[in-house]
Image (cartoon, rainbow, N blue to C red; front, side):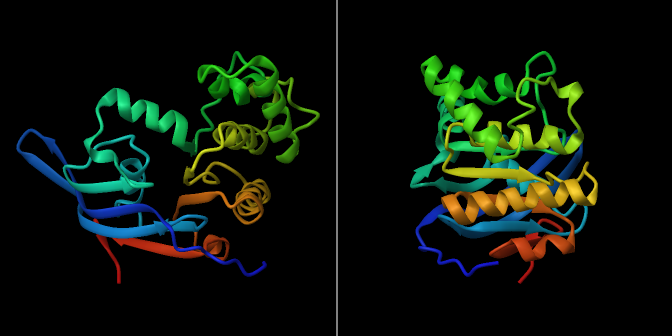
Length: 231
């Protein structure tokens, strides 16, 4: 894979975040004060053993959860101080997500699933149709865009999810073990697509993975163990 230059503009700045879950008298410390930076245009892997805090970290970065303490800045905005409405607006306009479970709406076609975020943002019909069709072509689903999720393979459904996550041109794409439910071949298709969007379009990607075979796709790895960064 070709050598890539990172411009070193900080897009995510994590400052000493912790996350505690309280269940009655029990307190589980999922994150214990971690700090790191992610630069614009990087493809970063968050790795570590099961239960180490990888997905918890991604949820804090993606504004899907709120840290117990610490601060997170995304593109200069201290997102840990935003209200619920501000967080929702920030997610819709700035962030994209790909999960293990695809999360496509079964009643909608691939095309409709992809253009839904753009329609929610109030984009005109000609725009969201064109953008959705273009992205589905880029992920190799030109001939499948009018199929419903139940008519698609797992790999094809994940490609729909990837196209949907990129439809609004997010500053950052978060991926939480996006190949976990796929066979090796389908997983490689997804990883190569992520690498393509990262290298050819400068898309910043932060991905959780436990698979050591996937290290080759990342520019850099943030390793977490027992809620702490591994040095």
